[in-house]
Image 1 (cartoon, rainbow, N blue to C red):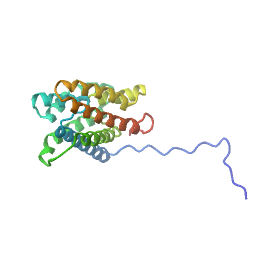
Image 2: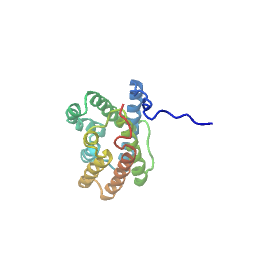
Image 3: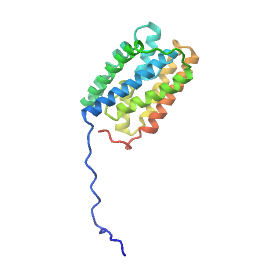
Image 4: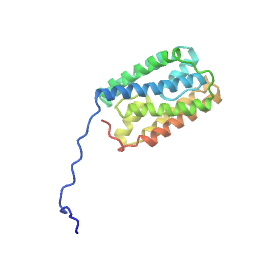
Length: 214
């Protein structure tokens, strides 16, 4: 029995139509992503650590002034919306604004809902880094971010093919090192570990061309 063959000049099978994310899918991804990130920030605050990007700047100011972390994070991101609107589009900017607002509120209110009695900095760094990476990846795949350096890194990945994780790692580690002015060096070292864990996770799981942004 012979196997039938398709003609050599036969057209390749048509690709299935691209299905865009529904509003519900976007909403659950933005909520879940910001929830993961808020948990990471709470872990860092409990252990005296910090992260990079605009959140890292907010941490430095929080430790230096005592102003609420959520309030500072929301205010610091305000100048980046103009860049996001010009370079990334209206949809991305609006989703990013929603994500930043949710994260600011969660960061302010979540500590009132639960308390952590004991937390080692190493555990906080690794778990927090993975939570940050996961949360940012949720947001990125639904065309949203948490502002600041994330906006710039995603733009460079789309426009120049640079790995978002590597760009973010450079920025984050720079911010963490600047924190030596207000944070104990040992805590800064644990914070660098958290930044490396987070950005390696993003670099492995968010490569250009692997996933379509719907």
